[in-house]
Length: 401
Ligand SMILES: Nc1nc2c(ncn2[C@@H]2O[C@H](COP(=O)(O)OP(=O)(O)OP(=O)(O)O)[C@@H](O)[C@H]2O)c(=O)[nH]1
Ligand code: SF4
Ligand SMILES: [Mg+2]
Picture 1 (spheres, protein in one colour):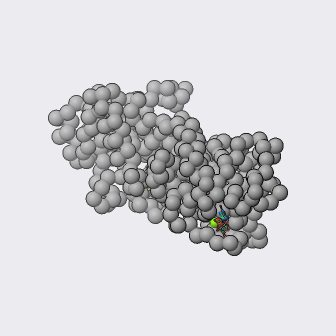
Picture 2 (cartoon, helix red, strand yellow):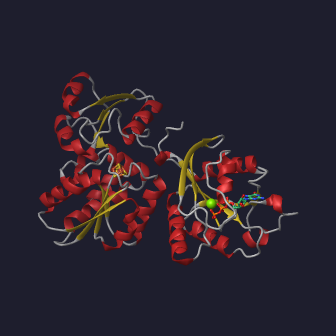
Picture 3 (spheres, helix red, strand yellow):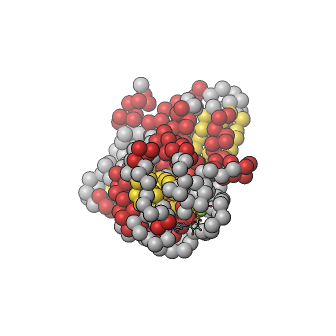
């Protein structure tokens, strides 16, 4: 369980003023002394992510944050970092300062969580320090769970509540399970090139494989170099390829077999395939000199090698025959650069969780900036887009309209 990748774990962040016991609460929930605790204000300065498995919650990421009432230049920067965390969470826990009578900061963060459509629960910590907890139902209009991180009172109940809130807020879209039936044969084409991680296959491919098995399907995994031979031996109901091999795989795979790519499956699973497909249209109307933001989800380009920096710029030029102002972002710098862009070309987002990708899609949507992902881009510029969308007729219809 501890190997469950972070991008598919539920993310729970703890918010509150400085010193209310956010880090202590993490320690109490996890029953470990991992988060730094002290009586000084502002002990936690940056969001701290802890992947862990907690019964009955399963694999989760708990995020400890800096206090929302931090002050000064540095303090404001810390608050900004705390607020950025909201975009990726499934659930927020707001710790209310019950030793004080002013709840402005708590109400403000609750408002922000509401505006971002995030599930959240309210917790009163340090109940061991008061005779009785004040009735705050008029202030917050919502149940407040009472705990003491010091004595552990109320903690196991809180874990149950977190588990229930997560189940309600989580609706998982399928990757492939709705496209196949039990006993269907799916060929997964996974090139093993210099970008492939040593000794294993990448996360989107593992997840697809797992869903095929869960559905009772039959998965055949091969490289593009063995695909021809594979097709002599098995008749697939569906072929799914890594986008980078799309062109060659499309050539080898007879038209009678449906073909799509991992990135198209994950565009659907993570966010909004329709939005990305519509974004592809924008490629054809880009003017010379337009600004294109090429955006990578993580800073270490683990599986992406030179796709964003070398291959996409090259294909862009070949396809459009135009010169553009290319700008790049990795990790969090997306939000700082997006305003300048006429088009965003985003990576497959395998290391970003669904919430973060949804937030990015929503941001560009609000700003009316078209967005496509690498897979859609590659399929489109290599003339295999039509075919890749055949299995999603309702999306294709939008495209051809
Ligand atoms: N008595 C009592 N003390 C607590 C409780 N929870 C936390 N504390 C104490 O409150 C102080 C602050 O706790 P932290 O967990 O560091 O608080 P924090 O919200 O993470 O603070 P910052 O990181 O500075 O924002 C420490 O001295 C803790 O020991 C509790 O339930 N009861
Ligand atoms: S998050 Fe993006 S840049 Fe990072 S490995 Fe995944 S696809 Fe590549
Ligand atoms: Mg702290």
